[in-house]
Amino acid sequence: MRPVVRTRFAPSPTGDPHVGNIRTALFAWLFARHNSGSFILRIEDTDVARRVEGAVEALMGSLRWLGLDWDEGPDIGGDYGPYVQSERLGLYEEAARRLVEQGDAYYCYCSPERLEEIRAEQLRRKQPPGYDRQCRELSEEERKKKENEGITPVVRFKVPLEGQTRFSDVVWGEVKFENNTLDDLVLLKSDGYPTYNLANIVDDHKMEISHVIRGEEFISTTPHHVLLYKALGYEPPQFAHLPRLTGTDRSKLSKRHGAVSIGEFRKQGYLPEAMVNFLALLGWSLDDKTELMTRQELIASFTLERVKKTAASFNPEKLDWMNGVYIRSLAPEDFLQRSLQFLERDLPSEVMPPLSVDYIKQIMPLVQERVKTLADVPELTRFFFVDRLEYDTELLITKGMTVESTRHALGVARQRLAELPAFDAESLEEMLRPLAAEMELKTGQLFGTLRTAVTGQTAAPPLFQTMAVLGRETCLERIDRALDRL
RNA sequence: GGCGCAUUCGUCUAGCGGUUAGGACACCUCCCUCUCAAGGAGGAGAUCACCGGUUCGAAUCCGGUAUGCGCUACCA
Image (cartoon, rainbow, N blue to C red; front, side, top):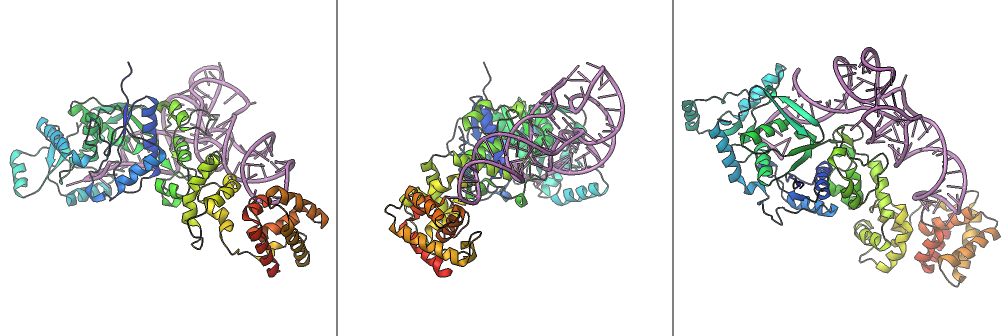
């Protein structure tokens, strides 16, 4: 029987979740789902100073938006709760105390100032920075003395001075570290909170996490973790470190690369299913050609073995393309529903909500295949809603035309449009095409002029459909205004 | 400074001893066409960072060099 797979996403609530973290969550989720295991959400709020109000909600909101559901977590509980570290402080204290009693950890009374000094000195002398282990072998008297001075100590891990620590990483293979390069890490801070290094071990053990899937930046602290598991008598989980995310310039993904938090992508009109698909391909691939995959396909094919070590770089252009693919594949009603909030948000304030859904329903099919993001929708459909069009009059005069010929063409067209029995796309086309021929104009010339008059733009959805949706009254009125301009 | 990792078309990538080095985005051309898209068909674009070695045979294995990046907190 296959061992039970339990993965976790353990973010610290420090703000709007970064795509890199969400990518990690996605991989952990995919792995759990692929193996019919459990996906656990745990909040690592042990850094009191960096805690941000509302961050947990933002986190859960983002995960929900992407459809990454969790089986156990702070909001729904589970058999291994609580799922918030600040509610588990006793557990860490107990572990720290045990380690001290066993001789695997010790109290350290060094001030942050002293630590800063020795670090600066080490750096100056081009030596590896790290704690100098001054408190490692303190006698009972010395300890008492420090206690009496009123210093609250931290608990440090007593790392073995020699030997090697090795572990097997699903992505990185066999990893080996010399113990003498390892620092005596702080386990319990002076405020009584554990550091990540202690808390994640205690919790991953107690929550029976089978696979620790996290970012590459943790690989250098993993030997400490392995040592801690051993010292505490725990069986270490499987480790899988994910390649880091970079911009296309190979540097750390940051603001200057564009959106970095998942909330921003949402605001910019990216679809959750496109984000999931795109994020899944950051450091993982199925084969040499498959790129478009549904959530189910991703779950079915995701394995850690196909995660690569090379940093994955975030290519926004490709995301745009993929998002466009997903938008085009949406059912028309779905596209409309999703676009609504963007229309309400971005349409000029003079366009008063509530918007007429009936009207929008006619417009949406005209732009669905023309947008890359939902945020493009208001932009492309603006002319359907506003009263007054603003454009450069020159645009009315198409190639090979003059002011006179344009006036004439618009004038005749206006009259025919006014008389047209039915104002639908088909009738419009049947009337306008011959009209162009009749006036000895190329279709592009006549239609171009009409397009500008009616939309204020040279690039717009197909003319006849656009006019049909706008309606006869609006079209005639806009043509009149165009004539006024000439 | 130490430790670790990486280096394949402009970009993202597949590749895990024998391939005409495959795909995608972007780009270009043509088709479709009332504009813009979308779609279709093509095209250009990679001496696989460099230098050695192993091998009948290396993008693939080994060593070195260079470059880039990550970690090196009482942050996670």
